Image (cartoon, rainbow, N blue to C red):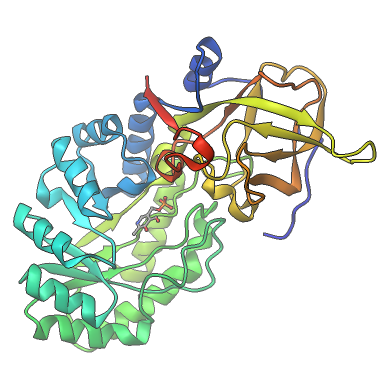
Length: 389
Ligand SMILES: Cc1ncc(COP(=O)(O)O)c(C=O)c1O
């Protein structure tokens, strides 16, 4: 992660996807995420082919656009919802309650009770109090225990906040049973944007050891939830989705043998490459004559959808109408009056030297974790608009 060496000699990819063509053929009065649901469907089919027997529970948080949910319902996807609103969105698009799991380990009791009432029967938990809440408000429900995993090699790690240590899992299993719940298995998240399938190995070893321990204590385990982590292309090489998913499943099979039910929760890997954002250059300037790089300010920034530029972790790719011109590095920033609203500075971005105010910029592979991260009116800027083609 600290190998911030810019590769300014890399050839520019000036081929355009359908959403990029749409962006350059239309005008927009504010930053707009353009989504291609055919591309979502293609990605779903590729992941399903690689995942084989595993059920796909799309992680709705990545992008809850109704058209995406509708497309996925039509393809037989299941859903991982983080809140009551996400469950409602899935049901509104025709998902059946038994196709939706409530995967957040931190749930309000009113949301648990509501979910149970509408027929949701599969919940995540990582703590005693969460099990008590479930036992009271969703009596008899199935629950899987989320584990913390270490040594994750993801670009966007999800360690620390969710999950319990492996040595706590047996006590939580026993407690769930005592409370009348059905503890069915384990879940984990390898970390979002895990670029290569081989990076799963160490994490799978950790989970497999907890799995074996639980079995040796006499617990019946029916469900392994392998979470998300499936990558999108942000300029660094990734494995193709089907091959990636197949390799992960081979690694799962090698460590866990035949598990009655495996579920995967891809978010980014399903929708990121189906979207691009139409943005505009607002200002190009230099702070002084000696400034090494220009500053390029866009009409979208950290608070209007590009939250994952935090720590320069996710490095979006850009397309402009000047991509045939010479390129030079620049610092890229958003439009707001917050100094945290600088997207890439430690490792500058290469953009055409002739770029100027008013130029359109397509931000590639932005279909995941953008629209829902946009603030509603920070500095008076409108939230990211969404258009589905
Ligand atoms: C429980 C859970 N499942 C799945 C996902 C989706 O992860 P990804 O977008 O890396 O596929 C997340 C992301 O935060 C998550 O918290």
